[in-house]
Structures are given as C-alpha cells and as structure tokens.
Image (tube, rainbow, N blue to C red; front, side):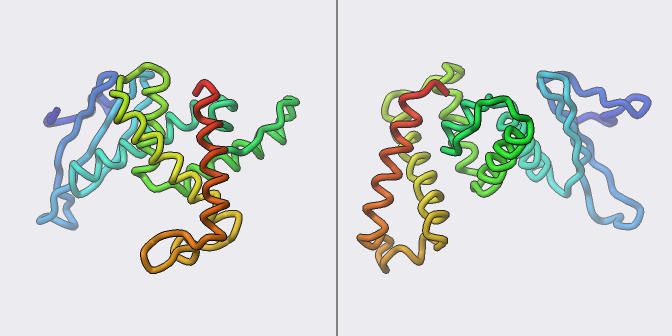
Length: 193
C-alpha cells in the first residue's frame, strides 16, 4: 500500500502483516527515484529498507522472512534439513557451533532452494496444501540439491568438475550421490519437520 508518509513522528505506521512504501528523490540525485519500504511481520518485528525499485525492496523482505524462518527452527528441524548432527547434551558452546554450521549451510543455498525448503516445510506442517505430485516433485528437487551440496563438500569439487559434458555425474560420483540421496530422503521422510 503506497502512502505519502510511512512514518508518524519517526515511527513506522505499518500494520502487522502489511507493507508500506513511499518514493522520494534525494537532493544529490534529483532524477533518480528511491523507495522507502517497511514491512511489519505478524510478530510485530519491523523490516525496513531503501532501494531503487519496489521489486528490490520486496526481494530483500522475502530474504529477511526466509532468514527469520530459518532462525526460528528447532535444533531437530535444523538437523533434519542440514544433516549436521547436533550434540544433545545442552552444552552452550557446542550448541553455538551447531547453529553456526547450520547457518553456514543455509547461506550456501541459492534463494530458490531456500524458498523450496520453506515451502516443503510449510507443506509438511500443514500450513499449505500441495497435491501429491507437486509435493513429490518439490521433495525430489530439495533432496537433489542437498545431495549435490553434500557431494561437493565431500569431494571438495564443483558439480561441473564431477560431471561429463552431458551433465551426468561420472560413475565414481554417481554412486556416492545415490547413497547421499537415499540418506537425505530417509532423513526428511522419517522425521517430523
């Protein structure tokens, strides 16, 4: 919703679950239009940004929302998605290391992969409903991406270096990919996200 001002006495007037934005032209760039953008999450936390397009503002908001969701997951959920085993002894230093490793994993993912994982999580939680074919396709896409990432980490090689000119894994990598894929599939399907 566009308004003339998105602030009242320097406080955002943005309501929960809504966005507000306005345009302005800075004095040092009078021909360029910028967007001042606010989004208030349903938990009342405010996201604000300035960009040269509304699309860029919303892209930043979506990234913020995905990161906010990721940081809200339980240790078990993080373990199921990342495959990084957590130490359940309550040691804060070990917990912090686990969180750091999970966040490193998350930061390596492409934005679309993050969105897919989030959508799959919402489906598994019953927040959204996907038909069986869409849910299965999404699950396979996520598992493939996670298996690719794990394979790259194990061999310290890019996907391109492990594939032939047709994009298929060389046999030595394909066998390991298949094992990783099966492990991830079992982990995601056998546990409650």
